[in-house]
Image 1: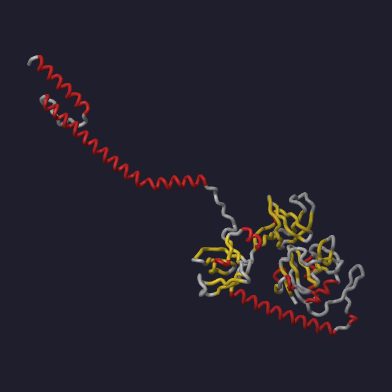
Image 2 (image 1 turned 90 degrees about the horizontal axis):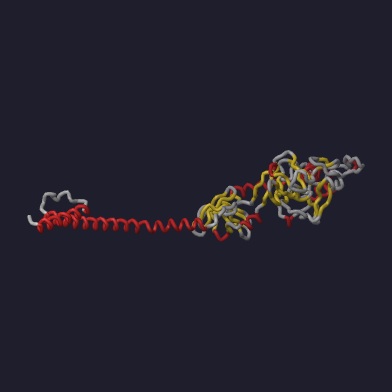
Length: 405
């Protein structure tokens, strides 16, 4: 072999070596092949590798595009959701969100189905409350009292906290034997008055473990440890409840008329010489009850003005508290009443404030008196004032007016 042949062979082998070094699939090429064959095999292998790599890259790019395109909307939604969560102010649900208040002239019917053809299950009166359970068209499904049914949405105002607060009555039920009501929210504050267990007081304000309530002596503070607070609403009356109420009221009216007739008969048959009753320590004498009307009750009660107020007392002469006074006055007419101003809100039958008559029982927060006419009540007020007259009768918020006769 001459020098030029050796040079050419060496160059070809070096070239093949470079190609082999850059190839990953050359095992099929024979090392013993000639330089020309070796170069040819290496070039073919290089082309195949480049094509394979191109195909792999194309497939990979295609798959990546498919996944990227399918995930893009989801990722966008996730990003938007995260952004919204970061930007939104947390919404705090209140107790009034699901409360709806009836705004009607008198009442609206609660029906069994969302339509005028539905059976009437009960009545929701104006300013009464219900809980909205759902919506069907332009009807609300509601629950109120013992009634669950449907009311057309136009007759209800939903989620209005101010309206709900204005028609609701926040109360504090006394859970201790004797509740001390103080002039300020401190156990060191002056004692304003006392209230027995079982009474229900109107809440004026609540703060830091203390509740401001209304009593006859004025608004005062009590520890929240000794009361249970809740909001009372007027609720729907079912068809059955309405029928039972009307029946009860009619029976009570008849019973009151019969009792009045008996008292009138007994009074007319008695002699005037036996008409004086026991006197108080001050030498005062009192006429016994005469007749059986509301006016007779009022006249009898007025005799005891000036006598003392005694917490827990029931004596018309030696001292009574507010409910003890009313209870003892009516006891003289053969009517038994509870020794509780709150419980008296359920005796007899209710009348409106513009229809009050002498003898009616007027109920306030933690207090009660007897209406005597002329926009005036007689009541055992406080230890400082004793039994006295007060006018106007609505000097405090009237919670109920109950009629016995």
